[in-house]
Image (tube, rainbow, N blue to C red):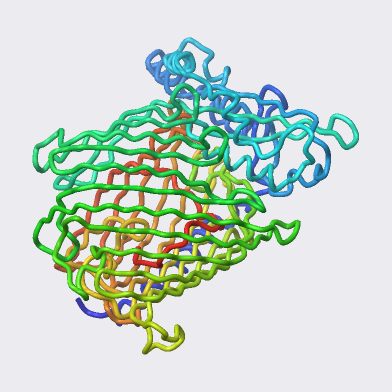
Length: 631
């Protein structure tokens, strides 16, 4: 494939992309998150502008239906599959802002009152139509999250003084508790200096069914389970492995159990076991992240598995049998009242292969037996503000902001070589008048014994990574339509890489080019730029909400350190996302794409249907120290 010389101008598309949409909707009003996003409680507070606007649309549609000739049939469809948007919420109106709790700082907490809510509010279950009937039956069969599980996730108790940071962190913990769809706190001053805190939670219907489909000729999984078993906040799933290309609908079975915040310790425990025709696996993981200042973190993880696999960049299939073990821990120390912390972490890991592909000193280092010790020190600060209509479809989303500076060093004892390692990472995220921005810069290298990290000749291998992400404030159009812009940029480069798996990059995972299948495309330098525009609509059918999106994915991949001298790949496309936030089902995405350049190594998928987990923003807390590797 040729170089990018004649396609360099295509990287200007994102600017024109955003400029076009901004000009098109120049009359739309743009509001900061704190003015725009609210929670609604139609029973306690009354109706808001959003409810009023949605109700106008609802009444307009109903009036139109009443004038149609096929009145009975269309009335039946309308009543069955739609509901007045004013009944969507259980919620109290409270601005979504990071300083919502600041006026109460230092006051004494008298009581903490828990208010648990079913997935569907009473208003949503009234009526004689099929939709209301189904929602009633769903509530009737649902088991609410136990109050004890909710209290175990709170970082404050009666008698404590109000600390806004602990309230933010508690909301985040509860919103990530399995089986809970939405959470919000209301602080009420009952007398001078004394407050009550009301904790409102809304459950999800916890039955979980889905398919992880990886293509006709690839191994895939279908699963069924419970995301909030007995209301105890633990997830239980059973997987069926299948391969349509082999016409084998039952290649094996896998069972997974995940317990969040085990016994109030904030340790998560995950166990996973499976067996099949050509694989078996056993995984046990228990980890706790940093949560508050002056906190500790740590974990212990063990896995053993065996599978038939064609390693990357090889033509033959091998039986890969491996065992991994690591143990890590860390401590943070509060430096000031703004939540800036110093931290130190350490990890020991061992990785052993019983069988696998052939290895040499310079080939398939990914499959080398190794032991390693790593340690990290640094400072960090993480706070949250709240917004919606980012990755979700209306429920609250916690947006982390702050910074992290981390230095990592260690030593790896390998099957053929032993090398010291040194790396660093700088991350920061903040809000501006134009939206939210997060940036991460990282670099890591193995170098010769006694070598100098800053001397190129002493480095054995080095990887550099730059990642930038931005999304705009919400643009409000008429009748409760909203638009948000996104832009993701990523650059990764490796020097002195070896041969085999883990030593090359491609466009995959979070760095894929949508609508593109690449054959034999690899490299050690990759650049990706992805602008996207999302239109959130008030449309909903049986609780399923709809959002339309358009995008351009532009990238280069190759072996030249200069990204613009590597082969160019790109697509533009559009589609629709569908999600019901009262259910644990993944977001359904239907997309269409067009190739920007044809080549023998490129195969386009004009149509794309997939289910995706709801994404989230990267946090700024320290994690287990690790080597920087290709993603």
